[in-house]
Image (cartoon, rainbow over all chains, first blue to last red; front, side, top):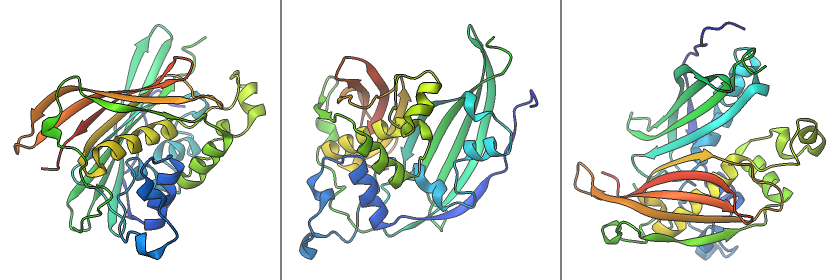
Length: 155
Length: 148
């Protein structure tokens, strides 16, 4: 594996915000809002649901590879998945996301850099995923940081 | 854009001040069923979250939860308190694994209040998720306010 940080071409695809997916994710996330549990009574079923905060993370399932970018890079031998750590995530919402709309996703590897630590060299991968309307309005940005413990530096 | 009703603001951000807190929430204990539901909904099928033999072979004491499961519960807890439409930012860093059987305690405190460039009230919060045995498993930050 090269010592040069790998690059990745940006990927674009459509992400439909589905009512059922919003509810399924909200319930999996133990949403304490009784409204999200909804009743089987059609009279209380909301026609529109807010997208759970972390829903944008599962957009990869609608993309051409059906995998997050870091997993795609691992499959292509660009990173060693067994040495990967999850660094953190940041969500920025320019407005709320709701079921019924379709967003255009752009996944890109925004930045890679190395840091020397007492435990060896760590390579940071910062992925930026932008969610826009079909008219180009930026709705949300998710920044994901993955860290690879570089081989040969940790004994 | 149509109002969802469910996501509408539930508090006035301008009423928050430094030191204001989100009501503490306890969730769990986390079970394998929680991890399976999360995996199915979000598509995270990493075997570390269901293959006990594999995780022990890698030196872990047992199966642990997806980090984003904890982050996602935090997000929905904030949303249920403030109203989802008010969440402008959420940042999370995973500090410790969440093991099966862990109870999770979610808390958040306002650290700064200000106005956006458009004059909208904003509140920054520090968020902590701790396990029932006192470990901080997630550290986060959030910003609340109406969209500009």
